[in-house]
Amino acid sequence: MGAERQKAHAAAAALGYVESGMTLGLGSGSTAEIFLRLLGERIKDGLDVRGVPTSQRTAEVARENGVPLIEVDHVDHLAVTIDGADEVDGRFQLIKGGGACLLREKIIAHASDLMVVMVDESKLVDTLGKFPLPVEVDPFGFSLTAKQIYDALKKAGVNAPDVQLRRKGDGLAPLITDGGHYILDCACGAIPDAALADRYLKEIPGVVEHGLFLGLARVVIVGEDSEARVME
Ligand code: 5RP
Image (cartoon, rainbow, N blue to C red; front, side, top):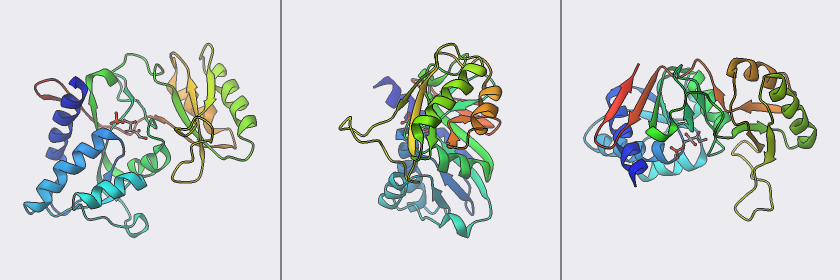
């Protein structure tokens, strides 16, 4: 309950970064969905924006709330992306991908003038890595890729990475992302040097993208019990 209230405060404060005429990147996850509901209310009151969704689920929620969408290939850049995160450290480095949408989220954040991140207090960490790092991989040869990811994380200073294929709710079939890939969740405990992990993971051919978002977020809004704290 506390986290939900905090997410709602963060989402409400994120509306302060939205102005008529903007094309928005619409993030994914429960906090992003709260934001979409609030955005829908503003649109009913006359706010004129359109959004590029970062997942099929976000597209559905946007439509339900009357948020106009635009095809990603019909925009050349976006004004603001508003998204959640699984972890945020003091340098605004993020882990994302808990909802398996990290590839599209990163593409859209990278194309945006500004990335605003909304989190509840539980997401703030000193060192990234308590939340298992999601890595999106091509299904072909994913076991080989998993071994290479393990080696890369070890080389980046992670003590004992544990790399697991994410499965659907039935616990059997692999979860398939909107882009048709698998997710390998990498329990790290702590990632001492996120930039090094980023570099080594990118060198692996089977890795499509990973959930470390470095140098992208410029605003972090932390929802608290009675208000939101904006960090820029
Ligand atoms: C989806 C994400 C989400 O932003 C992240 O998992 C946070 O979700 P929530 O707002 O539900 O806590 O990265 O891929």
